Length: 188
Image (cartoon, rainbow, N blue to C red; front, side):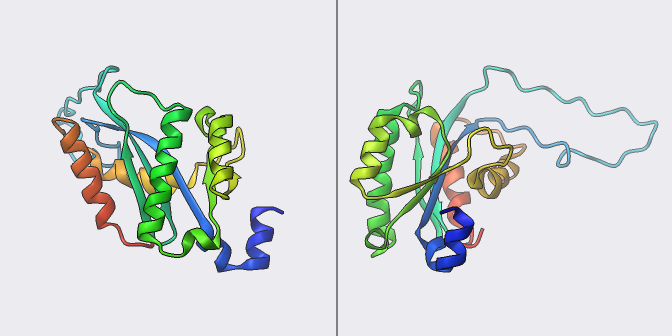
């Protein structure tokens, strides 16, 4: 049964079961978007000099899981570590605990986990853990041109908020991201 068929049959109760999440890089220096940096000037006045961001910019990986009521879990990957099946499984264990604490009764109603098809998400170890939780998965279609819900609804706005800011270290990045996420209304 497809997502739309289930929604048509079950309605909002189905949407209440969906938990989605994804990862994004958060850079210490996020350049302004073209729109943010636009300025009115006389045609004869010189253009403002803009520096390009270096390839080796400092950044950290942020993972956010959320549902229709708001953010459930924010996790930052330690520097020099990569997302692999073991790290993703640890994050899923943290997500389960977070759901228990923040959304009482949600686990007993069933979880539908919507995540993309990245290798750590599709690993046998990850699938086994999700099965042991008795969660259902709703995978993002492979090679889909559509953005994931997190990329569209969450990270796009986070990056706009960070545009033009210069952060000094991991702790400051984490603080700014957490402050922004907690300031968002549940219907973000």
